[in-house]
Length: 215
Image (cartoon, rainbow, N blue to C red; front, side, top):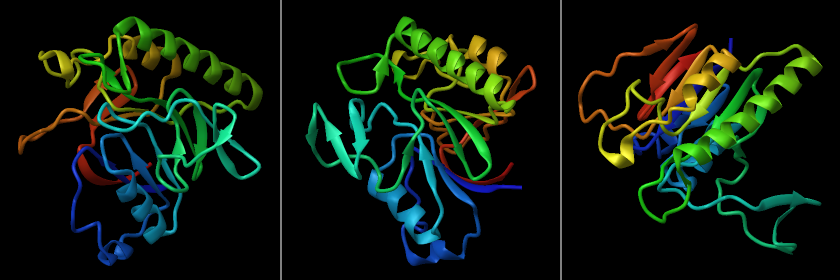
């Protein structure tokens, strides 16, 4: 079964050294708000793919495309600000290391920063993701294994202050996709124990910091 190093929000300096090469995993999963150099280093040092979604403190990655090996934006070659070799799953279905990911990055809008969405905007993005997942399921019979988000669902591990409220649209998204896991960051435990939560058949895990997970 695939094994992953799952990271979010808090850099572990012990992993940002050659010592990380002792970790045996099949992929790196990032749930947002980490330096892209950190994600790129982990994937390179471990020689595995990296799939991620952006957090509300990450640079805006919208509008970038790949053409002929070049990164393009607005029709011109440019440097992609994301992690080298990383796969941005935000708003997409991606298959990596034998797992199917559906991604929804960002947080509830609380200022004019990037990767922030109103509840209505994120709900629109989520509906588009569900449509794409259903088409892929019809085409190849495969379900989503992991719903990768930055923010949690509303009332399932979120907070009441505006920046840390979860997205209500994740509840119907979970019901539609029935992933085995929803992995999110954004909510810092500050030393407290954070139990997994369950919605239907989906297990919801806060992955702030780092974890080794087997799927």
